[in-house]
Image 1 (tube, rainbow, N blue to C red):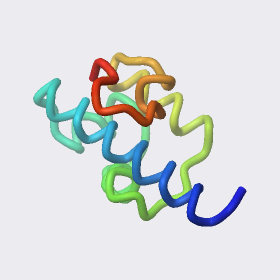
Image 2 (image 1 turned 90 degrees about the horizontal axis):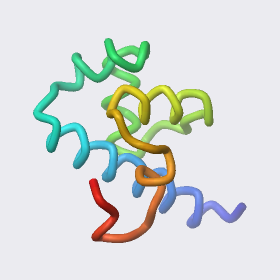
Image 3 (image 1 turned 90 degrees about the vertical axis):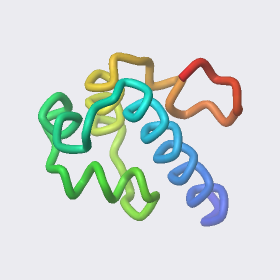
Length: 80
């Protein structure tokens, strides 16, 4: 995978994750508890500065009560 595509995907996942978290009105701390991940990890993923594993993406999606597909979708109207 080209670096630019990977960076874009990481950023899109983080942006969608943040939108969903804010729509649910929960903090990064609450999401970290729900997902079983450290709050700093959640923050890094939202900013697109952390390479995130598939397992962690699934944990985050579960914590946000949404599908991984919706968090990865590159569309402004993705139902978040």
